[in-house]
Length: 195
Image: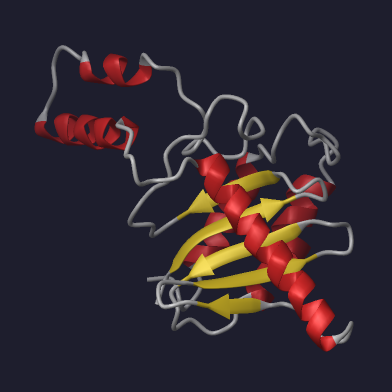
């Protein structure tokens, strides 16, 4: 069992935070203007000359050349891989559709918490303030809603909500807080299901 990725969406349906751990296919970087600033360094739009600058180092060791190759492989566009902004919109669309379907079919008492496919399991936790926490994990993982609630009640409230330097209702910037990112990483890596 393992955890693949973690998303946070705000009440404006924008992805404000992203972090991944065990993804086999990394999303391509988002197109310029496709996502908010500071969502994640891994999927942020990159300038065209970054990969050329990485490959033009004069002295490389075996370790350096493997990291350059890895970076170059991540920078090359793949025709079948989605860009991050497309992926984030699809994840949010699935959540919105399933929540609406469950409300219409079963009434207001039922809540959407997770669904499973043969490749992954999506876990969902929505807050009263409109933030939506989504985690993708291995399909055999038990429910992780308690982890999402723990992330919200702990690191999110401590490092984002109570931080006056983080704009909470911004359509221009994501959650750019190194303490929050490190705290989420530590919490997720400490889980039993994280392998």
